[in-house]
Length: 456
Image (cartoon, rainbow, N blue to C red; front, side):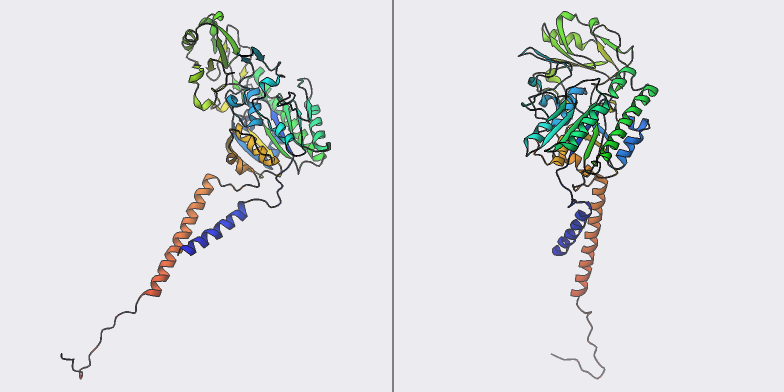
């Protein structure tokens, strides 16, 4: 009986692996292009007509909600994507930072000091350290900095005025013509983030216009890759760092109404504000704690574990987190109708991920992965040994053509099916065995009338 069950399982699993298992023609080392459209909120995909992006998705994979890292701001999340680390681990904890020991300051306009970036190793550095490979970058945050004394072999210094076409043209040229080849490249574009801040995501007309432009950029990228003969061989990931929430002029948390400015320094601003107390920390904390019911106030050691935002000296002693749609100011009026940085559990903060290429399935959709899961997936595609990271490769297996993946409904169906097969076989074996071993029915000896019974 046991041998029959083993044989059944072996036959089943071998058939399943043949259907769902690895592709023998799949080469684990492919070129990979990582593209970020800053501030591309996940539900823009459903709310706007984006034909080029939809075409890209139909022949590839889509993760509908990317659960990004807290705080949901630009520099921290772009570094989480390429390191697989939470912000407390890679050290880029905000768009504006201050280091108490060195008295150094970091901002998006003063970001070139390797001091801030060297707590982690981004994938473009790892890619160049293994074998004879090159990386390239068009304005992805951090790529013009000598991180661990290394920049991408090709890169563009950040310049907002450089067009998408020029950035795209350089990246595709480097991917197509360099020797040794560029195997990993990044491409960054500021929209729809800039317009989301200006108009707010609820301004459907203005957001429709900018998203049409973004979609046209995606179409141009696809056309360029096809013209260069790269489309069928290159893997392309299109994603973003965060979403966007609508803000309102009357939803302001004015710190000047609660605490004097001489008591603290505001390091990073709304909607997650980093506070460095100048006077007694407990005194500052208590004043801020009672400031507004629309803002959570945390001592550094009280920050919830789920944020993974506590264990780094660059995280300030007090952190303020505004409720969705609220803005923390000292005494200013509302400057932007859209903001991000809020709690990363909020759907409005989630971006998406779409991917196309030989490493990915075609026409597959998945609900969620984490931003930190992208890094181990990219390392797998490139055949790189990943650096220590917070990502989980198994979360992305269903996206990849060379991985054996079973989602929950399929797994339940398979288990039920196997149990039914085994139950049926067991019943058949028992019935067959009983039939073979049953004795012939007992026949009572009949005495004839002229037979005398034996008398003892």
